[in-house]
Amino acid sequence: MQRSHVAALSACALAAALVAAPASPAQAPPAPPAGPAVTLDRTCYAPGDTITATGTGFTPNAQILEVVGQLPPEGGSVLRTLSTTHTADAAGSFSSAIRAPHLARGRDRTEPEFSVFNDQAVADPNAGPSATVRWTLSNWALKIPEWSSRVGDPRRSMAIDTYGWTGQGKSLYAHYYRGTTRVNSVRIGPLTGECGDLRKVVRQFPFRRVRAGEWRIFFSATAVLDKVNDGWIQRTVVVPRSRATA
Image 1 (tube, rainbow, N blue to C red):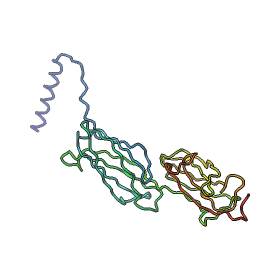
Image 2: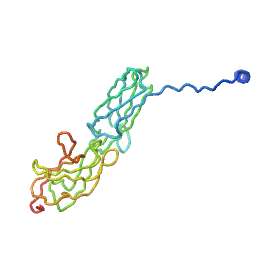
Image 3: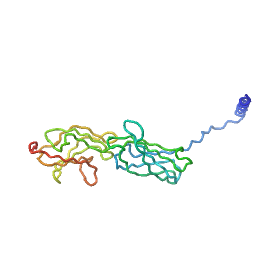
Image 4: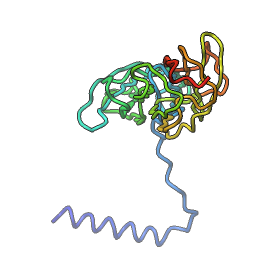
């Protein structure tokens, strides 16, 4: 009871002081210091892609521990953790580039990932301020069931299922070669979603006069194929003489 009585007296005294005091302009309370923040240059990466991270709000010149957690797409416990370190500059900022890892399970099409950035200069890095970024890791693959036996048929269609063309381009192209000579290049369709995916049914050879023999087909996200600098996936099929159109 004594504690409540003192509190009531203090409140009365404060009220009187406010009445007696001359009016003064209201001042906003000081803004709390900004906490750590990190952004990535994209939201989806394929294994080997460059991940560029930019961070602010860390202790100047501090070491920053990044811990990556790889999760199963169906939900559940972390499959694998990876780690690396970055160094903040005198302003508490950093910009760094690392390579995207392989998926924890090769059978997964995509896996949700999270990166936690911990400031190692605070007393307890695990309990101190941190920044978390969520992103997606995608396999890079192309599936054509009709070519599983490596036999091509210009008179028939095929179902293309491809994904993981992250940051490479906006459309998928097929470049048809006989030996080292390019015969034709065809736009298959747009790559959509954050990871650059495409599912489409098209003709196996969407042009006329297909000769018998071995064909090499390079799939890329570029209209003109540069085998040295472009990312591409190759399939090789043989067109039997009985199915050739030239």
